[in-house]
Image (cartoon, rainbow, N blue to C red; front, side, top):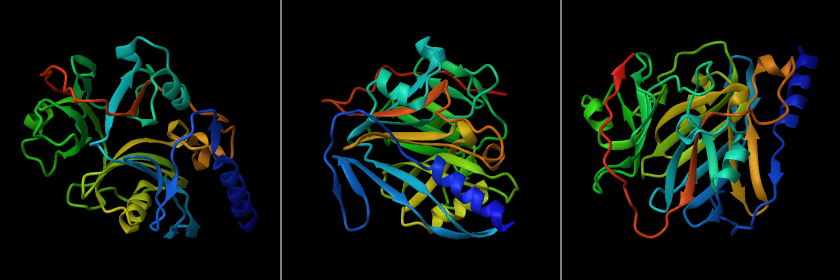
Length: 300
């Protein structure tokens, strides 16, 4: 058992290496609370908490990008809408001039279609509402008075269908942390890296990547204990296809997913090609909402 844990720690340290690509330098300031300012409205912090899991005490590696939605636009990019080939997260970054990117959702075997409802203005990647997913990440509101981005909670937002119609971009997936700040994931046995998107109580957006393989239940408990001021959180991917990339003063840094299964087999050595991603770019001038989109979600 001791040798297995040592091997696990070694492999995790290898897979935790940051990949660097050439990029323009950005401002870089570290605050007293540990957040590194990459640019106005964009901060990065690598947390290394220890937590008690089913296997005992464990050192974790969690990368968190904090984004001010008043200074950044969010973009859903899909191969079904763009008529492009699947790309790795760094390739999506380069192709669309993004400043950060994370998974948008899990996807079916066709390597195109999200497993949950997904729309972007008049484009429907998947028109069907998954019966077991109770979270919706929405942005591009059709009215200026609405929040730029939010997570709609099907359990707590009784008018969730009407709320979906008020946003041009909708991504459905599992909730991790509910609107009430509760861990809604039951304990399980599967452990893998987890990519998620959270909203803080003061309106910031968090791209969160827990690289250490954990059950989602344990990830949720850790996130709730961290100083993130987290309100709610939605799952966007897990395992070897999960990842997070961000532009920093050193270039593009990225973290790719792993799982316990892949640690002991042929783990992918590079980022996986993805059909659907969420990216950010700084706002330019007056914010345009685009035309109103009223595509209706269908029950699956």
